[in-house]
Length: 79
Image 1 (cartoon, rainbow, N blue to C red):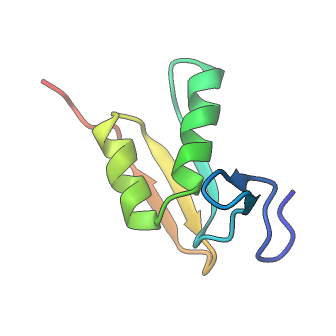
Image 2 (cartoon, rainbow, N blue to C red):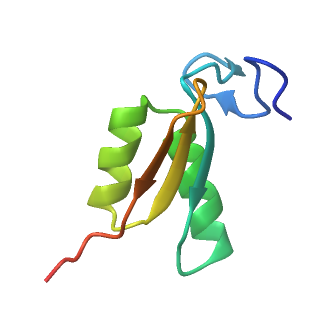
């Protein structure tokens, strides 16, 4: 689990623990499986990229940065 700047999530690009600016991502989705994989995918991104990606996929989320800044992304309306 998270320990300081280390995290239990491995970055597939490096094979090492994720060390990005996001330390927590919570996603609301139709299934727990979708919420889990989308939160993990977002966690590996830059905060701005993660927010944009989540909005693009219509997934409401809470993103917390290493500076404890809280960002709430609301579900987008697609029509």
